[in-house]
Image 1 (cartoon, chains in turn orange, yellow):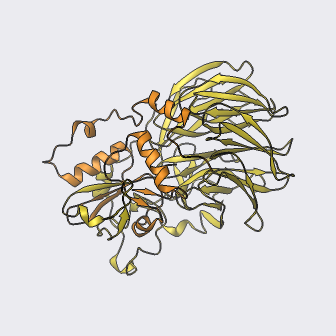
Image 2: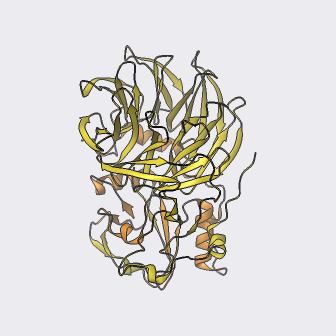
Image 3: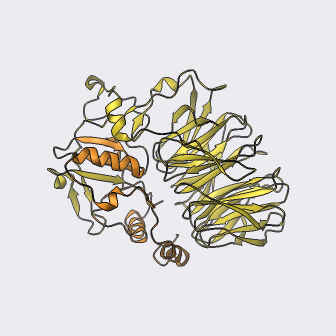
Amino acid sequence: MDVWEGTGAFAETRTFCKLWGIEGAVLVDEAGELVKELGIRGVPTNVLVDTDGTVTAVGASTPRELEAAVRELLGPDVPLEEAALSSDWHWQTDAERIEDQLSHRGNRPPSS
Amino acid sequence: MSVPEEPLLGARLEELELELELDEVRPGGLPSDIDAGPSCRVDLGGEGGAYRLIGEVEVGLDPEGVAVHRATGRIYVACSRSNAVAVVDPAELRVVETIPVGGEPIDIAVDEQTGRVFTADARSDQVSVIDVYAGRVVATVPVGSYPAGLCIDVESRRLYCGDAASSTMSVIDVDTLERTGVVDAELGAGAVAVDPQAGRVYCVNFLASSLTVVDRTTLEVVGRLPLPAGPCALGVHQESGDIFVADSLASTITRVDGRTIEKVSEMAVPNAPVGLTVGSRDDRLYVGNRGDGTVSVMGLDGAEWSRIPVGAAPGGVCEDPLHPGRVLVANAGSGTLMVVEDLLDGPPPVPVARTLHPMVGRRMPALRLPDLWTEELRDLGEWSGRKYVINVFASW
């Protein structure tokens, strides 16, 4: 969920998602409605929700914290995927691609 | 190397008592004293004791860098999504001037000697030069790709600029406004700091997660140190020469021995530190926690003395040189500048208290939000009956 873009929320967020390879459902909270209701004051923040809609954790932003929170949410009998279990976590996976896209800025919205 | 162990969130859930009482909750909302967090909150007992909130002023979109021009006392804030610098009168706490600069100004620096303010305009690959008395841009200096960090070296009459996408650090003559050198750094080169006593310039590389050490005289790279993920701010402790780095994605502050360029310690902070300055008293750090909406006042040993609630997603922090202890905070999410005062003379007798975020144990609110790709409204109830994680992020 994207928040607090300030301007050009959809264009900026699409660019960002393409740049970092973010897939899956992305909602845009342009006015910050949901984060206000949740009492969230910063990014990045993860909100974990159980089947009945109960929030089980808020925060959990580092890989270690997130893994622990997800483990607790899923319970001991549900295995995590290998990727999620990795402690050797790096957030940038393709430095050359990122450098190229930032340098040429072809995927970035105009500055004005 | 000493690395303090921070308990996992799961452990916190077991160890900490949820202090929130249901009768504290306002109908349809959250308790009135929520002030920190995503993962925890701080008792507001700190207000008036450990710190004082002086004021907050709207400055523009996504403010990042903040600096003070001593001669006028005015505060300059780089508003990255407004492509402008807001000039704030500190006495009245209002914007008195808005100066257009290049695309996406991120960092900002002041040269008192010439009365110039510099911005790193990330999307224009340039540094804008503002004459504070003329109130406008008087020159631009081309630099590398995606400039993101600035630092003035007063004695050398240089401005250093971290060029994130070109993996370099530009060197600009502050008087002639010419780019006189380019130093190889690494991907994500951004924040820069100078230690005149050690004769070194330090540049952190956000994407490469490293520190580049440069000889201040020869401008040759003399060292490199791997860092935890996402280093994006740093400061030099004057007395020891040690370097403190905010590792935004690891949620740590790394202390580096300035003589040996070896890690001394990694210190945990609340969430996503992106701003850092060494306090003028040289005994504490001010850390802007983007993921927490707070500024941590930390001892050099990593103890958190106080946690000051500020606006949403704070970025740059700066201590006002005219008012020691007064901290200026650029809140990227709120679009505001906040002024707070650190009232502590030293470490407090009681450490910062942590509790669970008040939303834990409550039901997700119902809301419909547009899908990024289709722009059609989607109901959060779409995911009911399943276990899921919402990652809240911003593109800046």
